[in-house]
Image 1 (tube, one colour):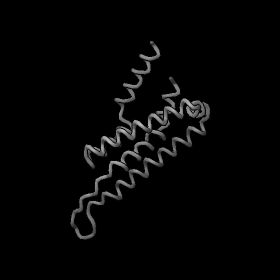
Image 2 (cartoon, helix red, strand yellow):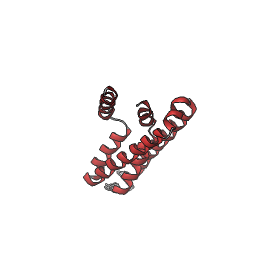
Image 3 (cartoon, rainbow, N blue to C red):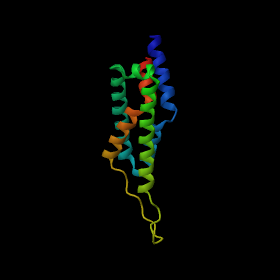
Image 4 (cartoon, rainbow, N blue to C red):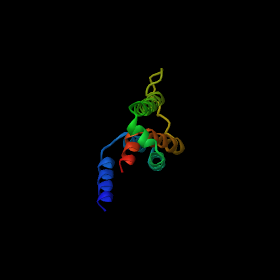
Length: 133
């Protein structure tokens, strides 16, 4: 029972501290609406499930034991998030060359779902969190 209570408390703390997943969901909600935000939440849930499954399969122990593997995954996740940010900046060009303002296209729910699967899977904190329990 004490292990379960520790897991629940740690999950609550991690859920309240905004990380890339929470920021991604909020960004999708603001830029593309409720439907896309809900799809991104579902993608994050699938990504976290996959991270948990990988952790239970031994990837978490490998990351905990190998600083090199952890660094590689951390940089892969960072590069992915940087790529997402650059893509968002590129898509939201506010002023094209004529001085007219063009509204950016909303992100599709499918793209938000797939994107947040990757955010959930490649966030090393999530995998290490699951291996800790």
